[in-house]
Image 1: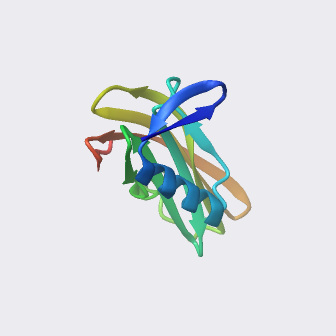
Image 2 (image 1 turned 180 degrees about the vertical axis):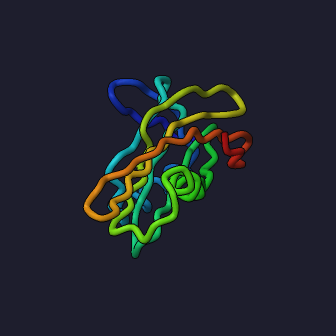
Image 3 (image 1 turned 135 degrees about the vertical axis):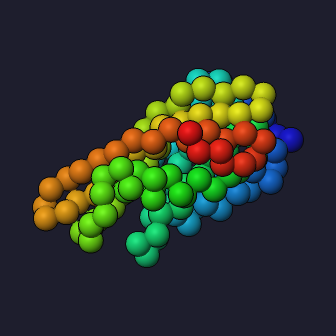
Length: 130
């Protein structure tokens, strides 16, 4: 493991997670990364070719939670959207086995912006939904 400094708070990141984060951040256009208060968990999204990929890194395990966008769009309704953006909104909680973040999806239809928020719970490397 390697010690990483962020916002003057040291935390430990396994090498494979550090490599994943480095490669993802250097190749992506991720605009928002939300960290837990203790800097042990984070959430971020990336949009490429009309496909959003969202991840939660919890207890040194990266979990794909991209289905949160579909959940949010289901709340908004089914339309032919002009544009869709999903980003982590805020950290809720984390412990030794699980993490929870809120994700927000914004969709534009007929020049009107619509949005919905959905909690994402990740436990033991699996996306558990709400």
